[in-house]
Length: 259
Image (cartoon, rainbow, N blue to C red; front, side, top):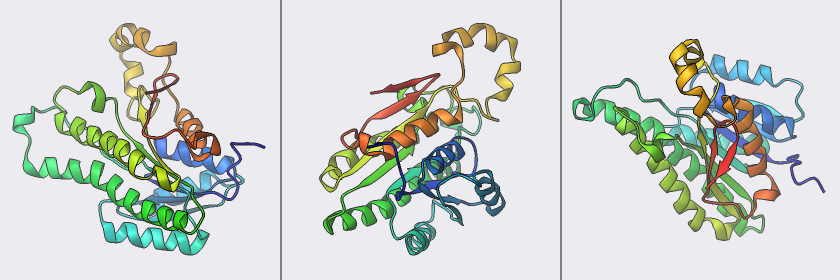
């Protein structure tokens, strides 16, 4: 039996219309998993779906503001109406540090925006998915996967982006708590944590001679991780092979590490 055959499974991916999220969506659809991409930008959603034309899994998109519980609940209902079930929820939507000003100089608005985008988005998406998954488990069908994208900042901190690190650390704590709470329903909760990932955000680094000389030699395997690396972890976490792998964080930094 192929433990990584995801035919018949359905995954929701918030922020799955670019970068890491798109890599996850493509990998899951390539393994036969149906995918519902939730993102704010309809044009990006459409482009993401077009990039997966020809893959074995069915792909749909929905415009959704993951910081708004009403929008999330509506998207979940529509997805269930279309597919009948949701087996995995990959919460990838978020926002970066937004500048390098001191913590004491940050405004209340900046804090609340960071908090809402990084933490509320995971909370609302996970809550909607977990409700469906536990109801299904109580009806005799125990299977569910909750996966959040976190950040190295949640472990090592960060200079002048403390509020960003705080929200990402909160996501890791939520994952660990949910891993305990939902295990009896057959639902697992894990985090995927980017290291040096090749993307539009990091492209400029490779043009910096000092970065290449001083930082690249310290990166495991001497390379950036690819968006497809996240896809490999996503496929594993959606498979039966990961049934007992919960409350762990997978670090991708030129390779995989779980702790």
